[in-house]
Length: 284
Image (cartoon, rainbow, N blue to C red; front, side, top):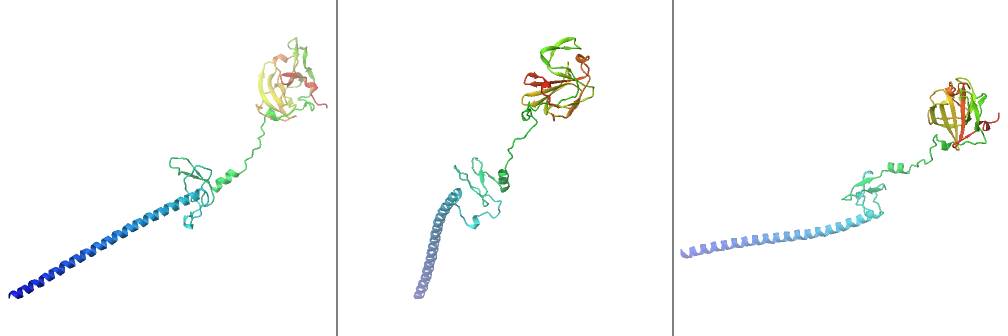
């Protein structure tokens, strides 16, 4: 009996020992496996870092090639939509990034240096459109030329009832006194049309005590013509009147010329000096 019990106990110890060994084996295998996986992960991490460094280097190279205009990337790097714009930080220098159509991409200086304005082909066409730089001719006295040799047209047909006289006095019947006269008085009737003696621009319209409604025209080259004793009309300062064109009508004379009767007061000025109109009229 004792031998049988000892034999059974020995068998149990062998079984327990075998189980224990199996457990150790399983644990060892698990530890080895975990260690191997950890090593692989470390290797993978190292590979990823290496790859990242390569990618960073490639990006640096691409950025450099973009900035100097020599970038030739893969087809996937090119924007499929023509309106897509290549965004790059604007460096200090004269080189400017371009998009896939060759349009210039101008940078706006900001803190992040990334804001961009894209110049479209339409904008470029507008910028290249020639601008008419010819001066615009306006109605100014500077554009008028008067040739004294060509003379003046008569503004009104009629007798001269008071001649030009600045060197000596002439008798003014209404005033009953002798005075100088810087103009001529051409006899006419109320409502008679008055013509421009030369092409001129209206520079002044006033109602003067002696000459009533009076119009001054600049005919260029330093000459001016003064027409007095006129009716009111729609003529205004800045209007240009062609030579020989009717622009006004005679009115009733002022009280200073009632005895002389209705007439046109006509004066020629060269600068501030008066000239005798009779010496400037064209020969008929």
